[in-house]
Image (cartoon, rainbow, N blue to C red; front, side, top):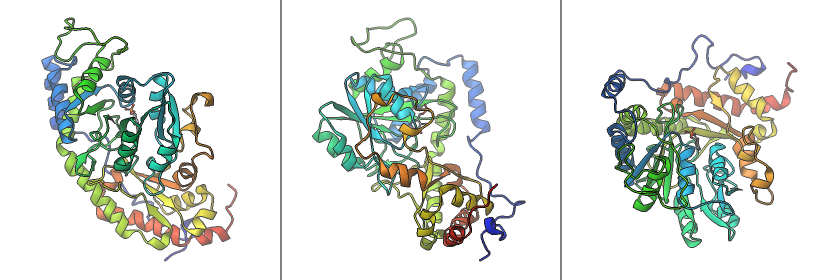
Length: 415
Ligand SMILES: *Cc1c(COP(=O)(O)O)cnc(C)c1O
């Protein structure tokens, strides 16, 4: 094997033959025709037939009875917390590693986010750390199914049941994923999904709450629809919303629903392709490289993906600063790896007063170290690439990982 490109060897991938991931978001001519038809029908919003069809089909796919379609996957989390009655004085436990929106939703309802550490295998909420964080003020937990794994729903649901807590699954990364044979988002009280344009189903903006509980479904519907009950025509609300439920206009439109209904048709095949892509990477990755892939959720099958986390754990890799081995990977000709979100409480966009949230004593070492300083992510589209591309990505990791010691010997040149 040639020397590392960073140290003067030849790169594994020729610069004139870069690897290419399938384009995202996906576009489709037949969907464009349907969008035109919807436009001409003038039935654009207010729970129009296109929205009803999508919400029903998406809920059914995931094993839930009700789907309430909204404008994004942040307000769906806010809605879920609000209809569960979470508010000022309450605490909500969530994993330290997630997109800041998960924590912001807790702030929106006036409650206190309580961060807990994640599992080293999955990067999802660690059930033990969750249980330790429970106080008499805890009202809810938000397990996040992160990148390419599903939180341990079995353990989390058992703990939540014991302490009578609401469980709101943040499934923004997990469209089409299943746990113990049943869709994510239908295991807890409410499941929240995002259809922002980078997600595995994408309509520019969009989100949905799933639930099996008809009372929560009715409240969710009113919450996003400025108080209207389901079935009312515009300007003709049949009944008032329940006292104390502060409702919003968080409606999406039929345009998003049309795009998503078409994507739902291909979701099972897409998820199968991503699982195959992960399996190819797993098989091609040399354990001696010191790189390890994020494990799928324990009972997840199929596993959904927003991406796949990859950990640098080898002796030499862990002695190097992250930038150094990332630089070595890029020098081999593959710039497709991304970083992790890092802990929410360190995120640039999370500008909340530290007095308004809580961390465990000793912080969240797994999220901070393994989940950030030693973590790469591969965006989901790469998992849909052809076998040669996937094997080449693994070869880049194998080359840098097995020769990482050479990077230790050779100090970084100043640039
Ligand atoms: C994308 C995302 C959200 C928020 O969804 P938006 O539709 O962008 O508002 C929430 N949680 C997680 C984990 C996400 O990745």
